[in-house]
Image (tube, rainbow, N blue to C red; front, side, top):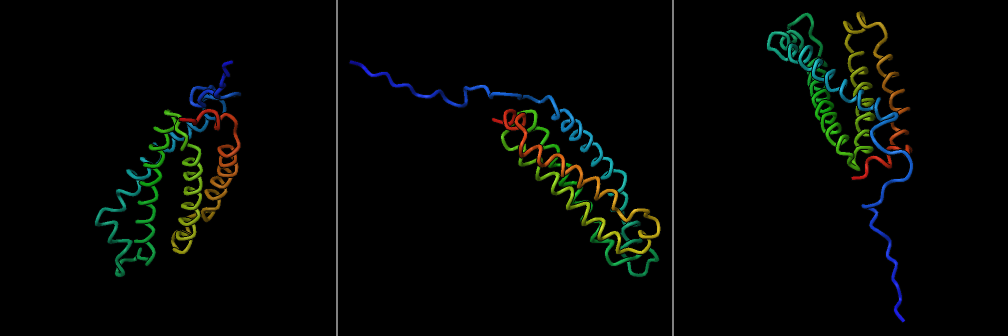
Length: 170
């Protein structure tokens, strides 16, 4: 008498149950990633590169200048690094997004968390400079609230969504 052995099929060959794919709310995430890449590029080219030119850098960081404040150098370097890091992370996530890699949900949570932290740190630092306080209407609160709302929506989505769990499986 021969016994049959029923071994479960490899989970790699199984199709996920329920919703899957890059549709649904993930369409908004895709659009957000693409737009973010262009926004970071624009910020780097239009704001950070000009500030890093010797004339403007000296005007902001030289103690003999009228526009001098001791935090300007640190803020400029911080914003430059943060924008370059966010740009690179966004591109990396987008590439992994279309490959449906398992790491995408964690990367998205990192992106949203780092973005919120960068906005908060940047606002706190900029609010230490009197000339910024004079020209800035909301002290950066609007940017902080906007990023906090995005985090409150998308971080739980990437943690709990059935579509996310079924899509990013490779």
